[in-house]
Structures are given as C-alpha cells and as structure tokens.
Image 1 (cartoon, rainbow, N blue to C red):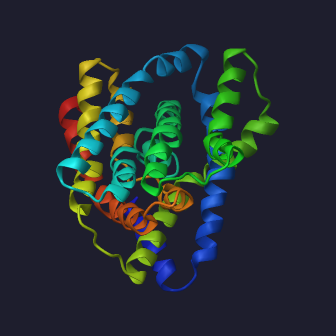
Image 2: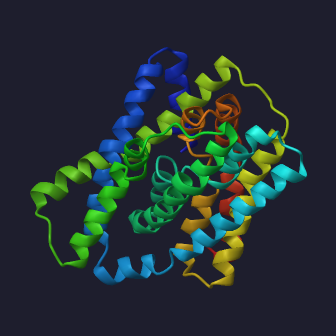
Length: 303
C-alpha cells in the first residue's frame, strides 16, 4: 500500500496527476469502482445470515463515534479552541474517511470478507456526519447554507444506495447473473489501487501548496489518530465483537478525517482553512499510525 501511495506522489510530482485528474479519480472511485466492489463482494462472499450478523454489530461503532463526538467537544472547550472552529474540530476528531480510504484499505488488509463490515461502519459514520457533524459546523458559521436537496444528495451517496439495494437483494434471495457480477468485479478491482494513488498524490499536492498550523491542531490530530481508535477498541472489547468485525471497526476508526469536511465547512460559513489543514494533516498522521494499529491488533487477536 505504501508503494502505491509513493507512486501516486511521484505521478503528481511529474505533473501527470493534476487537480482535475484528482477530481476525476475521486469521482471514479466513489461513483463507479466503489459501488461495483460492493455489488461483487457482497454477492460472491456473503449470505443472508452473514449480512445480518454484521448488521447486528452496527451499534458498536455508533456508540464509539458518539463517545468520540462528545469527547471532542469537551476537548475543544478544555483547550480553548476558538468558538467558531469547535464544530470543525469535532468533525475532524470524530468522523473517519471510512469509504474512500477505509473500505479499500480494510479490503486490502482483511480480504473481501471485510467489505460488508466496513460498509456498516461507513453507514453509521455517514449518518452521524451529515446530522450531528453538519449541525456542529453550521453552529460555527451561525447559519447552515445547505439546502435540503443538497443534504439528501450527500447523505444518500452512491455507495450507501448501492449497499442498501444489494443487501435487500441478498435478503430476498435474488441471484444476480454473471453478466452483471463479472463486469462489477472488473470495475471493483480498480478501487484499492486508485484510492491509494489518490492518497499519495493528494499528500504531495497538499505539502506543495503549504499547510498552515492552527492553534489546537496537535490535539485534533492526536484525537483523530489515537483517541478515536482507542474508543472503538474499547467498545469492541466491551461488547465482545467477533475478531474480524472488531479489527475492521477499529481500523476504520483509525482512518484520516472525512474528505468532505472542508467543503461542508465552507458551505456552512465555518473556517474551511482550519478544516482543510486538519483533513490534510490527518491523512499524513493517520497513515503513519496505521501500522501501529495493526501491530496492536495482531498482539490482541493474533492476526
């Protein structure tokens, strides 16, 4: 994975991956490759019982996320973060990029069996981000300027719509033909490499443009890289989750901040510069910290 990220950075340095290409890669992964890998993996590796087992554990990450949100607001007050940045601070601390980065990385680490587990974490995180997270950032800007239609379009993303439809299809016992599953598998195979190339290129572009260091950013990055996975790890131990489910949830919780955070902050009139710097730096810190998370998991679960 690190080698693919380095290739992405090299391509950006050579000028092959520009801002327009980054936008294209983001759309290609989130709107084409990700729905395709959901269709392919869920139909190939999971039965109705498997899906219900994963779904029955969805409350665990939701509890950990809620605890993270509450703790991040407490930290923002304790460390005297500017009042017009506290919603952004909480969003970066609490909500991981669980689909664009999390799902491909979990699939690469744990195999296709991790797909529905990672998706259920994503469902919980996305609903909370576009409700509680959006409220917090709108509070920063004193007014939310996002229309209901825009909010619904963000909440019901292609990945969420796909996972809901496919889960219903599997629950009803409907079998998809090879003429659909085979192309979906080909398209889905692009997901992991393209996402990792995107990460490497984004990191290079971010550092090339320069990043401003804001007051409280160190605490924000500490919460994103360490506190969030620690809360999730405590939750999976408390509720005795299955080892694979536990490891996927914890790895998801250790991902960088949601890439939509700066855009939402701007739409709400919040400090989008603070959000952009925190999101970019969280990518560096969290990607560097992921091997530590995996070492801890291997010591606990032996895998």
